[in-house]
Image (cartoon, rainbow, N blue to C red; front, side, top):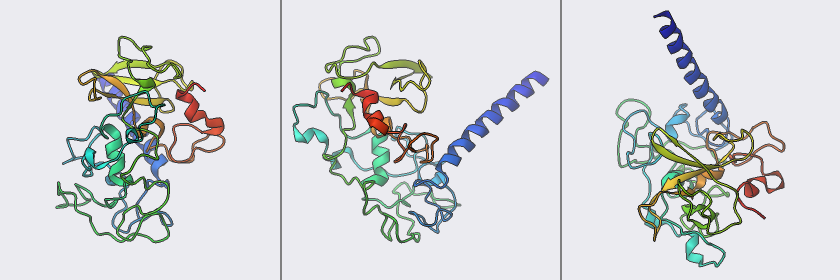
Length: 276
């Protein structure tokens, strides 16, 4: 019994430390929208950091991210990179979805950052996600209503001038049983594993060789690619290059910016996937 109790205590402590580490990275970053983050995009509405993206109850079950606390736009409202008809795009692009759709619930600039499904406190639940109409600080990249209005983080709904999301890695063709079946050979090797019954994919950055870690380029499973419906394949999404929990003070030189999974010195982020 004592051994079981000790094991439980160790497990609890480990989870606590992991959560504290993630929260410490967000605190003070551009994803810290609380009143304590004065001088950036901040609101006087709450000091809860996680609530702007996640809720422990009443989340959007259509989202592919954990306990998502925001209403997402319809995939058809976005203009994708595919509409450029560039001959260099080998992979098929699926409708905007997966984790990218969640990222765009703030970053397309159409919805206030305080449009929460489950606001802090009792009685704040509304699946229609109305804006809380909190007061927002001036001087940031958000307007007084809490919508992103300027800066590179305001991607808008026209994504033609942004790196493709929802695009098949390496031009498509790779599957869990044939990782090297790339239509485009100018991409780095792909790794995969099964975690809790789900297929996960990544491109190894070399930080921890052979196992998936936060500095790897993370790919996301999708089976809705046009022409390949039902076949699970690795997809490049917003969170393939960006880790929203990473903060911007990582111990790399030069420091990581824009929540990148690694420093982009020497175009390291680009070259993690592309062979050039």
